[in-house]
Length: 240
Length: 337
Image 1: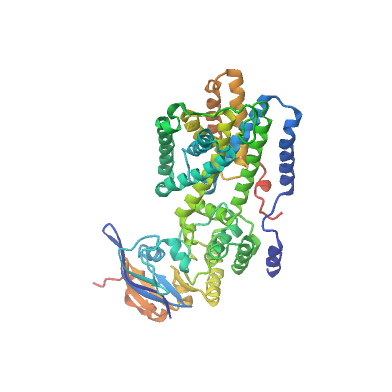
Image 2: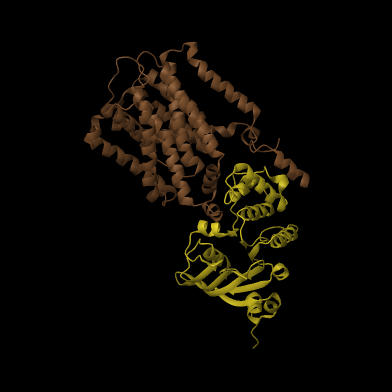
């Protein structure tokens, strides 16, 4: 069953087409991996879906709601959570307080919001750090914080922007395990990733972008053999 | 790990530093019994000014410290509070006790009305807009005959001291307790606010509005809520000050200096911390009042030179304010001890 349907989504900044006629679906309970070289329009796509940037044209339907042009907070309240490529923790608040702010989306009682936040912090394996200020956490821990905070709004769909980017190699397996744990917990996920091995391992479907356009969309095995994807990632070799 | 989660569930919702709470209780007790020591009227006046500016600086702390919006025209709500209660008393004989609450209501309404268009502006633009709005209110009141124009309103003297009319002619002690009560209630209110759902959401908006909106927070709505609450905290001080000096006029009540002073005091003490404004006020008000005594008149502006100097030093050496001089383990109360 489709949870998100995107049709012919386009966005230009001046003369530059950041996204051009992008179409894809995400099925409930699955992981959609989004790949593409730098500047392909991956993060812009997330900004368009979550309302941070208004698309020029197209259609975005989430759970039978047309969310095109809607404000980010309203989209969040409908059940789309997200993390950011450039991390945005509430630096002067503790980890627990960061996640509690997410919990308040569904829970007004302070104690209940705190208990719910504690469970999610435990889920992302940071319970020992709950009273640490966000600014004191390592990059990997802050990535987990953002995931926990997004989880706290009880999203039906979670958009993750480069969760494994910028962290050391030792941290990556834990984050991948966490993504799979979230999927097992019933969260539908769309994730932008540069690490092809990870995307092939975790994704049910993959959307490949290049220069703002969709160049491939399908199962990981198909994407792996797709010539346009290979070209975009490895470049073409001119044979004289 | 499960054990840690169970332990965490058993923790109180908020850790409180017992020593700090005892210190605050001792301070509150001292403030309550202070008049019993028979201080002369200067010291009572000094304390009244400290209470008044502490609440006003706390009001500014709500908008700037909690929600991250810099207002340069916050004295506007002081003036609205002063004029509302005074006008109602002068024209209709309404007790200032009711006038105070009507002033709070008007201030909140005005904050919402000017907040809706202005809070779309961000950063410096919002600050400049609030500055101009503050000045424009002064100009309007200077020309508005209904409220006495430039001469303002003289609050008629009652024959004897009266709690109904909130006028005390024989002693400053009743004023002291009225200002003290508002000071304690305001600080308690802002403390509870900062620990409420609204307080958390405001701090989220302050720290990162994009992340806040990704968690379902309507950023504009919460900025307006902060502005209205801040206005409501400021307004009663205008009403009480009007009763204290028994005159309201545009130059005094909508004075730009009020807006700048509350900013300076909060920045000096520590913005975003509930005790920051009080620390700033406890330092700057005595400097101001003593300079008035020794140099006469308005203090020969020496107090303003002091303010400027202190502010420069704070910006260079302690951008987080004097509160940051306290040991970290006291400030960061939520850390495990």
